[in-house]
Length: 436
Ligand code: AMP
Ligand code: MG
Image (cartoon, rainbow, N blue to C red; front, side, top):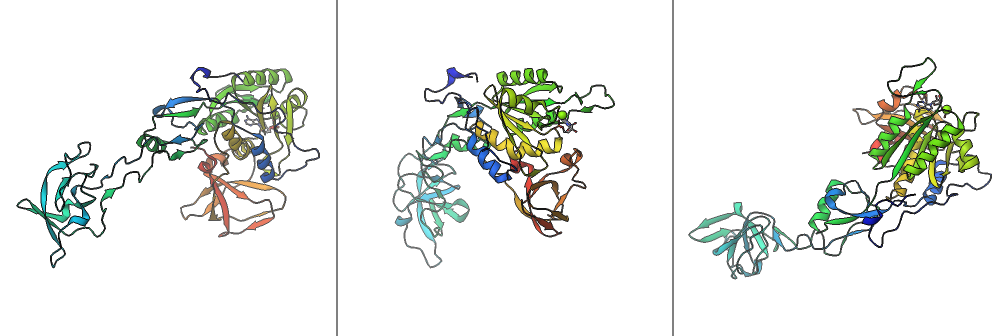
């Protein structure tokens, strides 16, 4: 891998690491691997491989932290008023009258945001204070201006029950030295606010992972190309390139290679030179025209993972010229499911992020389904206005329309199961796979 941005890297920066060539190897004799076991192995095989650089927070949205972000100062730095009103010391108020009200003199001056009071508030008096102003010395509590009557230079109000009312304590949001966000966290706009208020102007940000995408197949046409009767348009490349961008990676388009060893080899060489990881679709099984798996077996490093999952045929994983490669099935539905379930969490870790299990939740089924034991199943699914989850009209794996129709996937366990309407099923929205 080339050392990108080496000049900007802090001295302590881990240079781009490489995964071992045999990182995806399976123990001999492995047959159909259950999904959870495959994911566990995958998790153990991957590590961050991208270099990092120091970036101003304004340029770091979407980046993953290489080092924890530590608060440089407290937020708020001083106790300040949460409302417009009057500040006083709760313990120094005069006794209340029979209605519970006190009368105190109005002190001279005022405290506003960015303009602190000039002196201390005299004991037993109250000072005008505006939202965001530091609470002056001699005061600890603020009464809301709407609760006060001002008459002849004195204030009458019923004191708030609690001393410290309407005051934001120093450091209540963050204390100096707090770990605000850990290494591996992918920054979102609201995180930038959190860093900013705690005085963090720069972060150690991983450079985006470059992921190359190659479609293989003699039958594939480019978008807009004049159709031939027995050719189909390439669905996988536009889908996966867009998904990678949404997952926070830099997608590199390797185009399409015919089912011919030399062409696939050349494309993989290009991918290994331009990217940190490669995704191919098609040609991953053991058929005559399955050049991706053959080349990896003969010239790269290959572990063919026969995962007990539907949809999804054998998933080829290996390295080409030292670059990790995911050989996904050609079928667009299987390619999509395997990309989200297997490739996405692995790429997230390679990019310096955290391994994340898909976030799903239980919803009542609006469908009926029986499945046999031995295979995890993912069904194209979407929410109904009633808050139930329905599945696509057909499980046909060639129906790309079902992917577009769906809002996510229903995940059915490895065990045998029969679902009737109303039964809880696990629904994973696309966002649960990390797709923004
Ligand atoms: P393969 O994995 O190469 O055996 O392909 C399995 C099925 O998926 C075949 O019907 C292919 O025509 C189809 N297929 C492969 N690649 C693509 C692609 N990029 N877009 C749409 N269909 C594809
Ligand atoms: Mg093919």
